[in-house]
Length: 367
Image (cartoon, rainbow, N blue to C red; front, side, top):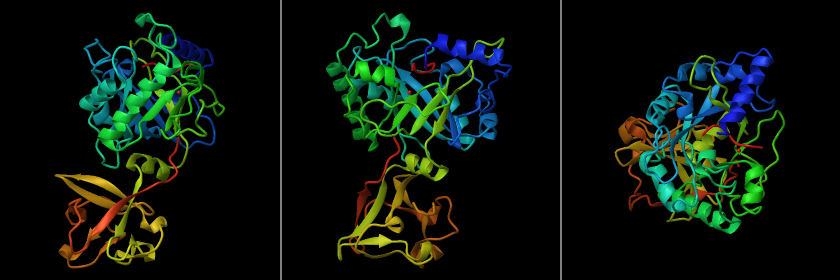
C-alpha cells in the first residue's frame, strides 16, 4: 500500500541481506514476535496469478483485497481492480477471512459516493467470513499532483472520512476498517480522535509495535512489511500483515458485534446453558458469554445463529422436534440451523446487539 519506491527499496534490502524475494509472504520477512495470526493485502500490483493455496500453507489467515479507488470512473489497472474477483475467490477457497478495500481520493467526489463505489463493486455479506469494508487513506499517488493532504484542510478531510464511514455503517451495519499511517493521519487530519470506534489497520514497516494515530488506543491489523518486486517479473509479493489477537478474535472481527436474544415476555436473555448442551432458554437477567451469538447470513433471506463462546451453530435437531441448542455436532450451518430473521409471536425475542471490545497503516504499501 505504500509508495512503489519504498517497496522496491525493501526488496533490494532483502536481496542484499541474502533473503529470497518470493511470492510467499510467510518466507519473505520474519514477522515481529508476539503476533501469531498473519495475513496479506493485495491489489493489481500482485498480478493475476497469486498462489493462494501457497499463501494459506505459509500461514496466512486473512486478506484485504483492493476492489476500487478514487470516484469510480474507469482507471486502467486501478478502478475497478481487474484482479479483485480472482483474488477474492482464491482467498475464500483457501479458508482465509477476506475484506474488500477502497483507495481514497478525497476532493474528487464525496466520501459517501466513494463508499458506494466500494460496496457496489464488492457488496458486503454478513456471512461470518467477510472482514469489514476498508478505507485506505494515505499519501496521494504522485501522478495525482496533490500535496500530502490532497490539497484539503484537516476539517475538510475529517468531514470526508466521516461521510465514508457513515455510509459503510448505514449500508452494512459494520464500522469500516481504516488503513492509514500515523505520519499521514496526525498532520493531515489535525490529530482527529473522532474515529476511535473504527478498527484500525496501521502501516508501519518495523519489527516493533507502531506508534498509533490520535484517537486509537490499539490496532486491529498491522502492515509490518511491503511487498517486494519479484525478480524477472512485473509483479510484487503481497504486503505482510499481522492481527492483534488470536484466531478466535479474528473470527469475531469477521462476525461483527454479537447478537443477544431478549425474550419480551419475561425480559430475560436467551442462554446456551450447560456449555451449549442444554436447550436454549430465556432465563438470564444479564448478558454473559453464553448469551452472545453471531447472526450468519445463510442465504435465501435466512440467517443462522452461532454461539460466540464455542463457534457452534444453534440447531433444531430431529427435524425441529427437539429443542434448539448449540451442540457439538454443528460447525457449519445446515438446513436445521437456518431460520427467518423475523421472530414468531409465540416465541418473541428481540435481537439485541452486544457492545463488546472491538479490536482497533511511516508511509503506507503499494495500493
